[in-house]
Picture 1 (cartoon, rainbow, N blue to C red):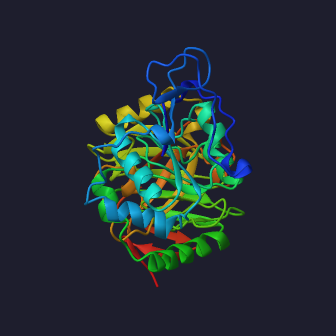
Picture 2: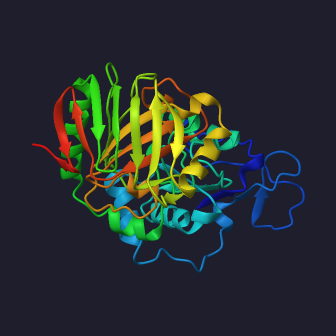
Length: 377
């Protein structure tokens, strides 16, 4: 087991795919703890715990979470014995991160765990040193408080050949409930929806809460998040279960009413968002609306871009205030504001925020695809 924590000083050039062996580091002349080797710049508190010195931990993977962690690594990632496996986590999700690390080791992989700061905002880039080593692994998971999905670092890691999943906001409860599903059936539904999006030109969405929104998807390609990423460069979100696409910038117009969750959790009352020429121009509602408006007021104007249209397809997911799960709930759609540069769009900003709409109806090129949250055959 190899573990890296507190990443601010990492400068290691370790490349397991190129060397075919575990990393080696020079031993400093003086160490406060003989079981640890400091890496990086002078004064760095980054530590690499040497595999032959690792002490036995009293922690074990909770029985409730263990089967789901194994299913994620075996069924979703297809992790193989001898592969190099990276876990990116933070102090809030460390127990889950360690569960992935330990299970990967038991499966015969060489596992490394990296702790990153709790960023405070979805889409914030990880430290540069983490981005650098991320590219060097065969597979990864990122159970973090805030999302690394729509970051340049994640995209470049996958382009370099790493496959894996982000799990922003994951909890032990969500992990244990939503991963034990029929992936073949979910893939079938998700892929069918992506096929419809791929061929479509215009989308219209309505909802009982007051949504009435149109936008173009002409020339854009739908992405299926099926929870399966067992090929080189594959990427997914766990729990999986959505078909999504980047609307064409500047084409969205109308009203979006978010009545599920957005930002940090469930909305206290529906958020009415006025959208004009591809950007959110007004947020109306209660406390949740004011908080969301305040967040975007601190971002560049382009951050209000209508970035994503997504359709939930996970039958085990339920709305509870955690966006990671909420956006996957079968029978919902979501619209995201901000970054879409990682899945076919043109806007690259350090924020990506989803808003969940309950029981929607939507059309693609005039053909009804979903009515009141139920897919139309």
